[in-house]
Image (tube, rainbow, N blue to C red; front, side, top):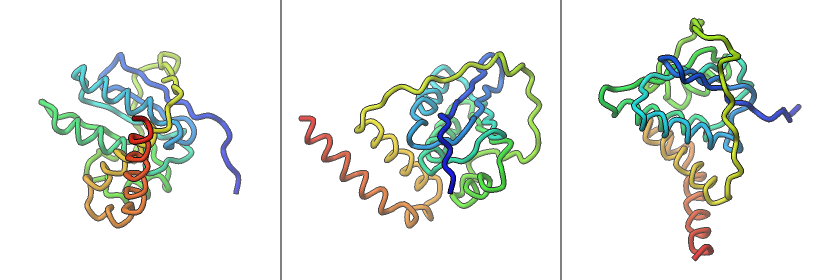
Length: 176
């Protein structure tokens, strides 16, 4: 099985409405912390409409999907409520979204979204170095979001949740 050694890039265009995030490469627990911070910042700023472009995404894991689920739940709580739309999903990525029940939280558009900006207007999110504890907390939160999005996901991730809770508790104790 070939692995993708190219570092992923997250391109953002925040000057319009909706905000557009393009995923280039594989989105995973190893690189999605900036996306989580991006959603937190823009939701606090009052941005409510987001389009995630997956046309150049080669794959994603449950952590990345969990952080999208969390952002969608936060956007839905906002006044007025916001929405996150997914477009350009490959058959495999669409299957992942549906298997986790995220199609009930997110607007899944299987067609083309008309981009009203030039790709050279987008800027890259820079992936910062993360400490191990912060990364484990993010992964834990992402999987808790998946369970909150659909309780049927608890059976899929209960072992991951138990492991990560134990790891983060050990790291907190060790840090004291």
